[in-house]
Length: 65
Image: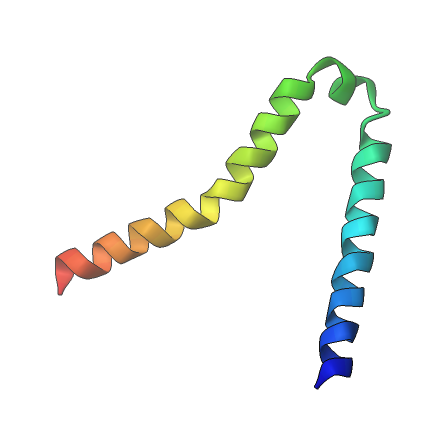
């Protein structure tokens, strides 16, 4: 069981490094450099969307049952 956990952690670490490299590369674009605050706010908004969606579904489920 320990080997599977280590393998999963290694895979997630590699994916995190790839994502970080993509962010660093995207930072070289002029649009990102000039609108960094907007880019960060867009990332936060996209990250919060699943929570809002699930909360809305739960609300609809609870009110209709």
